[in-house]
Image 1 (cartoon, rainbow, N blue to C red):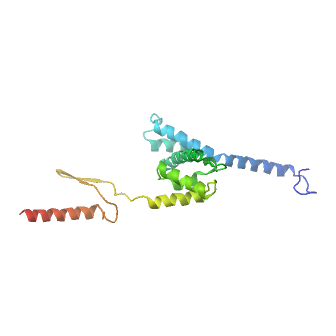
Image 2 (image 1 turned 120 degrees about the vertical axis):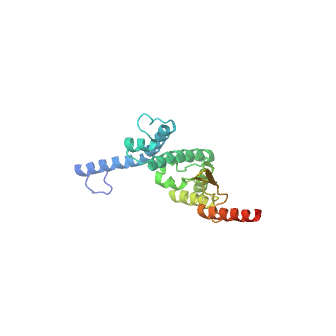
Length: 202
């Protein structure tokens, strides 16, 4: 009697079985983001408190042997949980009614926010919510995060220590590319300057 069209026959037992199975999959999928976020939170606890130390020789070995995931994947899940919590906190702060919460955003949709600090994540979320009139979409997140990544100030490369007989040479870049031309180029320029100073001192 619930036929979508008058005169349409009721579903068969086989059709009902297919429907029931499909509904289970849909419900499981709707809860997937929550489950992934919980996994990230739990991984954060395990890593933060070193609760793996009696099980494996390293964090990497632990997540591989216990959960069958790489250390990179574990880091992604932890970051997803952290970013999700930041989003929920920001949405509560701005009080946008009807805003899509982090529970409804997938891990993949939030990956563009990786690498941003808390302030940048907050700015990106507010921008994405404003763009969608209160509804945050994956596309809006991607655009907002992209603008912040482009505007991030370039940083000099990390310092490099080279040990030779009787001496330790420490190279500390002070500027990013293109001013910094590479470690080898810097060493060559330094040797040239040393030669020049030696000639002037002679």
